[in-house]
Image (cartoon, rainbow, N blue to C red; front, side):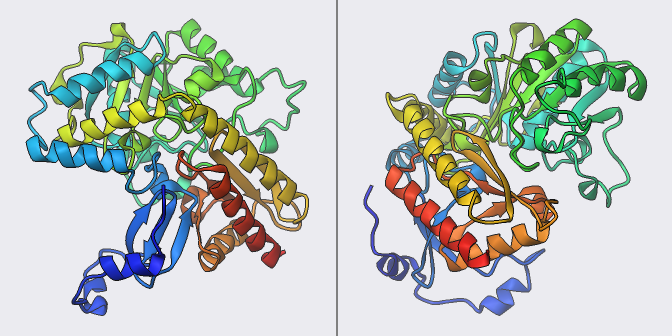
Length: 438
C-alpha cells in the first residue's frame, strides 16, 4: 500500500471553514486529546497539521487490517448502497455468510454463533447470562487483572478497584482470583516448581469465597488492559480441567486476542485449548466497523433473545466488513506474516531492554506485545509509563498504556498488516524514545 504525502493528505481532508474549536470543546463531556486527526492509511494516522503517526495500538486494537483497508472500504461502500441495517429478526446475506465463516474458523466444539451484541462488554455480559441460565448457578470467577468491559456488571467482574470505586452497585457473586502473572506471582512461586498453584488455588476460592454456585470462569487468554500477561504453558489446559470437573462453563474473552492478533485465528488455537464459550469483537471489523458476538457449544443454546440481544447487534454493514476481514486474515501467508513480524518486533524490543534500565520484561505472542516498565527499585512505574507514551507523540508514535494509565505496561499492538519495514520503523522510533529517556 502506498502512502500519500502527509501534508497533501491534511490539505485535502481539512474542512474549508474551521469551527471555533474552543467553543466546541466546551461541550465535550470530558476533553479529548489535543491531537486532531483527519485521516489514516494502513498503520499510519494523519493529523490536521500534516504530521504522520505510526499507530502502535491499531485504533485501540480495533483495526486489525489498519486504517482504510481498501477491500473493507469497498465492501462497506457496496453494502451501504443496498442495506445498512434491519431488525435482527430477519436473515440477510452478510449475516448468513458471517455465521458460516465464524463456525468454520472457530474451535470445532463452538458451533453456534450469536451476533446480536453491540460491543465486547455486551457480549461478555450476555455470555455470563447464558452460563447462568444453563447451569442454574450465579457466581462468576474472573482474574485480578481482567478487563471484561465497561457496563456496570462487567466493571464489577473486571479487576482493578479504581474502576469500581465510584459505583455502589455491582454484579453479585463475582469472585476475583490471582492471575497467572509469573513475573509477579501472587503466590511467590517459581514456574519450574509451582505446580500451577494459580489454578489449583481456584478450588479454595470456590469452596470458601463463593456461594458454591459458580456458573462460569471468564478470562482473557492474554490480558488486554491488565498488562499483556501471557499465561504459562499448561495454565489454560489445567483451568479447563478444573472447570469440567466442577461443572463450570469456561468462557474465553477473545475480544482483543481474536482474529489473528496472536498469529493464529484465536488465542484458543495458539494455546491449544477450546473453551465452552468465546466472546469476540474489536478486530473482526477490519478497519473499524463495530461488531461483537459469542460462539458457544450446541448445549448452551436456548436462552431467549430478549435476554441477550442489543439494538444494533447483527448490523448488516458491520457483518459485511467482518466477512471480508475473515477472508483477508484467512489468506495464505497472512497469519505467517503476523507471527514473523511479531517475533521480529519482540526480538528487537528485548535487545533494546538490555540497554535501558527501566524495561523489566518484554512479553507477548504474535503482535500482542507488552513492555513492562519499572523504577530503579524494579517496581512497576506507571508514572514513567505514561511519560513514555506522552513523549511518543513527539517521536511520531501513538502508544497506549495498561489499566487506563494506572498500569506500567506499554502496549504494542499495531495493525496485523504491518510489514517488516514498518516494524523496523516502529522499533527504531521506540529505540529513539527509550534511549532519550534513559
